[in-house]
Image (cartoon, rainbow, N blue to C red):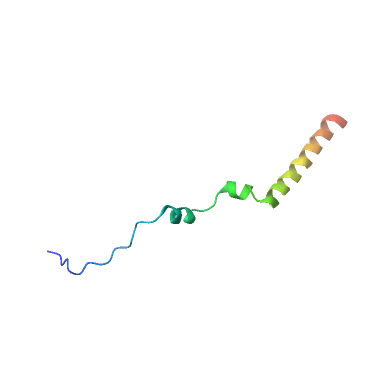
Amino acid sequence: MPDTTRLEPQPDTRQSETARTQDEPRGCLFALSQPPLMIFLAVIGCLLLMASLHDLLLL
């Protein structure tokens, strides 16, 4: 029969909801909300748009 007088302490598995949400990694939507990335994507999009309009209308 096991000796129950010396039980090892169990880690507390109860966590609050805020503690769990802080440990989650931030995903792609967080990266897309950054202003430098949005400016970069806007510049690239404008360049592609200008190039496509140039090809369609002027050539």
